[in-house]
Each structure stands twice: as C-alpha cells, then as structure tokens.
Image 1 (cartoon, rainbow over the protein chains, first blue to last red):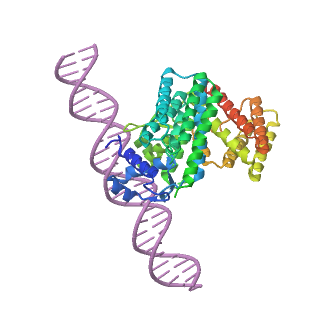
Image 2: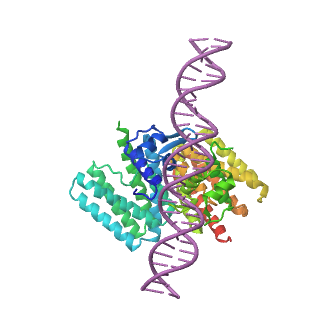
Image 3: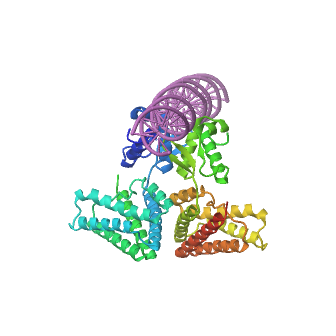
Amino acid sequence: MSSPTQAQSVTDILRQRILVGDIAPGTHLYEIPLAQELQVSRTPIRAALNTLAKDGLLEYRPNRGYAVRHFVAKDLSDVYEVRAVLEALACRIVASKGLEPKAEAVLRGCLDSGDRILAKGRLDPADLTPYRQMNAEFHETILEAADNPWITEMVKRTYHIPFVSDRAILWEDFAIQQRTHDDHHRIFAALLNREAWRAESIMREHIYFAGQVFRNFFERMP
Amino acid sequence: MSSPTQAQSVTDILRQRILVGDIAPGTHLYEIPLAQELQVSRTPIRAALNTLAKDGLLEYRPNRGYAVRHFVAKDLSDVYEVRAVLEALACRIVASKGLEPKAEAVLRGCLDSGDRILAKGRLDPADLTPYRQMNAEFHETILEAADNPWITEMVKRTYHIPFVSDRAILWEDFAIQQRTHDDHHRIFAALLNREAWRAESIMREHIYFAGQVFRNFFERMP
DNA sequence: AACACAGATGTTGTATACATATCTCCAAGA
DNA sequence: TCTTGGAGATATGTATACAACATCTGTGTT
C-alpha cells in the first residue's frame, strides 16, 4: 500500500477517477461494489466518501449515500472568482513584507523556465508537462511565502474541482500563454518592488481571466 | 436523537465543546473514552473526528489520532484576513448586480434593529443576543445574495474557528459597536447604489478591524 | 383506475471483533 | 551513562455482522 492508510489510498483513487471523468457526474456511489472492486472493506470506502464530500466533489444525503456532483459553467467561474481574491490576497501580503531570498530564487527559476519554453514561438505538446510544473511552482511558492495557512488550505481545496487546479492549463493558444507568462513577470516585479496593490491586482486578473478561458472551453464541451 | 445520524450529533457536540473551550487545545481525543461517554460506538466517533479535522478544529496524524488544535493570535488575524476578502468579494458581486427586493428588506430590518439597540447610548447585556442575531443575519444575507456557494461555504468554514463566527461579538466598547453598525449602514447604501468598489472596501475593513479587536482581546487572555 | 399500505429488497448507519501500527519502558550492551 | 533493541501495552485502522432506514413492488380497497 503506498499511502499510510487504505482510507487515504481509496480517497486518492476515487478523487482521481472523478476529476478525470472516469466516473460520470450524477453517478451514485454504492459502497459495497466499490469495496469489492478496490479489494477493501466498506470502512475505508466510507471514510473516503466522507472526505470527498467535504471537498465538494460528492453530494451527501443522510441515509441515502453519495453521488458525484454535477458541475456547470457557473461553478467554474464561481470557484475561480474565489481563487482570484485569495491568491491576490497572498500577493498583497508577500509584497507588503518583502520576498525571502529563497522564494525569490525559486520564482526566478520559474520565470526562466517559462521564458525558455515560450522562446520557441509555439506550444510544443512535449513542453506541457514542464510548463504545468513551472506554473504550479510559481503559484504555490507565493502562497507559501504569504505564510497564512488558511489561504493555502482554501486555495488547495479549490484545486480538487475539475479544471481549477494550478496544473490545469489549456495548451492551445500561444498568445494567451505568452500574456499569462508576462503576468508572472509583472507579478514578480511587483513583489520585488513591494508594490502591494499592483501585485494584488495583477494576480486577481491573472486568475480571473484563466477562469473565463476555462469557462469558455467548458461551455463548448459535450 | 435530534440529528438524522449519530455521527452528526456527535460532530455537533464535540464541535461545541471545543469552541466553548470545554476541551482544552492540545488535548488528544481518544476514541474509546469518547464512545463510552457519549454512549455510542467508535464508528460515529471516528466519523465526527474526521469531519472536525477537515474543518480545521483538530489535527490528524495517521495511526496517531486526533488532537485539539492550538490557536494563537496569528491564527485569528490570518482567518479574519481571509474572511475579509471573501465577504468583501460577496459585497462587490451583490453591488454589481443590484440588491433583490427581498434581501433589501431583510437588510433594512437589520439596520433598524441595530439602530434601536444602540439608541440607548449604552451596551445593555440583555441586548447582546438580539444584536448578535442581527449581525449574523446582515452578513449571511449578503453572502446568500452573492449567489456564489463557494464563498458562502468557505466563510461558513471560518465560523468554526473560535472567535471568528459572525456571532462572536465583544460587547464592551460602545464606540466600537457604534462605528461597526455605521459600517453596516454604509455597506447597505453602497449595495443599494451599486457602488461595487465602495461596498467591497468598507466590508473588507469592517471585518479586518473586527479581527484586530479580537486579536487584542485574545492576547490579553490566560 | 387510482390510491394506500404491507412486505420484500437493498443500501446506509452502527456496533464490535480482529489486525496493525505506535509508544513505553526496561534491560542489555557499548 | 548513554544508546539501542525488543516485549508488552495501548490506540488506531479494518473487516464484518447486524440494525435501521429508504425504496420498490404487488395486493387489496375505494
């Protein structure tokens, strides 16, 4: 078993399946079939379902069990709106108190990495994974630097929603990625210069816009 | 049994005890003694502990159980900072799209109620409960009006932290309450006039300041 | 034909026994 | 004296049996 407890393994497996779309929205999750399929008893299954419900991926009704939540376009913009103000808050805090040298170095690394990838002038599918990695590191470094566990925790919770993670990237439009990465440059500059309002504003728009892009994409889906 | 399931009853009981301070921070919660005391088996106890841990009231370590989280002054300001931007976001949204007549009526009622209580010129202990009720209704009405379940859910989650609920009020300094209630008037005016930035700014400061007040209070505690 | 109710069926909620991981403490060795 | 290893105790993790609740089905009544 990879995770310390089976309950956690089951949680990860089910979360993955739901996020990937392997289990369709609206599907009722029956405990006994899941237990048989995953070769565990109902106990860890129930713990996992409980966790996923609190993450917002499942809906729970007492005595009636759990069903996969149905997401619509509005959910996406709603969540991104929340993420936008939270990460913007983190930026304001970091800018106010200044960047630690260590965080500064990490952010510089992210900028360089993005610069190199985009220097090609086109979006190579092979670059998606490292770009995604870079993006996640950029955002998470700022969150950590804000040193407010509540912000971090709430933002991470939004990552559990389909299309909301900082690893969710639409690798299609070069112009958009270029602009997005330019945002990163400006956010970094603002943090370095301790321009709190500027860092806050850019980050808010940075994430809000991403939400709009995903909403558009989502609305054109099956 | 009042709640539909024992697990939920136990959750409510334990949450109350922790918030009231009946169970001291740092206390390790053993499943078997709790089960015996509450006259249930370990199963609903475990479900409750799981829930409270996800709410942030308990800390969980695999194979080592749950302990009541220890809150320090910084936690308070951190949480209030998050609550401030979230409720401010709700205000901005409501102001942008305008107040529904129903919500407008409720908010007017809150303002009247507060006016009447404060007209006495002093803080009567007997008025604390209705004032608290009024305050909760004011904030929750705005949250509902924003029609973004994610904001509501995350703000409600912060209420589970000691001293952070919209029902937590320091009923000591008349001048502070007067100013606070005046904030409510101005927030209402801004929502009515659809002044998004104004509603957002006042609400942000309104809650941020409350956080400072509680932090001061908290730091002078045993 | 429509409705109400009783029983059958299946799913979730709870209790409890067993498995496993962690902690305590003491003794043996360096 | 300090470290280390392991046996026993204790607490948590898991499996499973049973209880309670919800739903479905079929029958009888109006």
